[in-house]
Image (tube, rainbow, N blue to C red):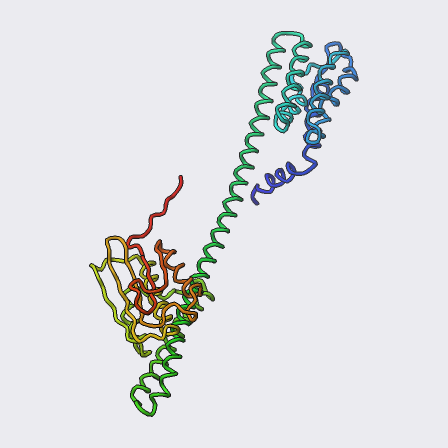
Length: 390
């Protein structure tokens, strides 16, 4: 068997209320060793006073944790009264006083320990019989005091490290909770975009299908096919999002990017809305988050056109600047009326998406004062720098 149980037992003993009692008994036995194992020069037994003083200078250590200053004063007083009787065995060290001094230096505040320690040192120097004894006593007292302060410093450092570890753990949990909240908000925005866009297109197609069924069967068939295709696409996207919510290890499907805008405009054009796209400037690489934001912003703007604007035409305008991509989605519909509240969830999510990648987004009447509504966004073409404090 391993020898590990012995250190474990000592560790348990050190943390129990019996540790101080054990220390007091061991110290008393060690202090009494000269009286037990040495013989006097005259052959006479040692005076009973020596045994009493030895017990009085060591046994109070059992209360060292409860009253460290009182224990030190009692132990030092008894050790100073040892030479009042004879014959007595020589006592090289007073262990109880040194241990009690260590305890006071370890746990007592400065305003308490310093007067007590100085008083004991002064009394000790006044009662010693030789300079050698005084020197030895000073060295021992300083050593005990220094060990006590070192122990206090080690405990304070351990407490500070434990508090820091606990604080870091709390911060880690808060970061995880914030990350989870951001992820839930992102998924909620994605689900809103998918549902609002797909259902709006399906409603428009479903309303147009019966009208064209008798007059234009081909158009009606195309409308019903568009409904089925839009529904399947929405189901696929929702299934992937719900899989992420259900299983964190589920691989995520790639987010749509700005390169998917042509497919988006074709899909919206299938709902009877004429959608055109114009680009100005030289296209440049777009960060992944800005690319996804650009797609969702255009998707939300076109969805609002289909649902609320009553427009015949919509135009998606992209302007590539040096460090910014400007997006404008304009229509020729009714404009900002009561059917399109500026504080809607879709427009709020649009602004949040732009802000999440360091950009801005606004919505309102067209800048050229023509009838209709306009969504404007500015997205950075370089990933925003994040400052890190040392």
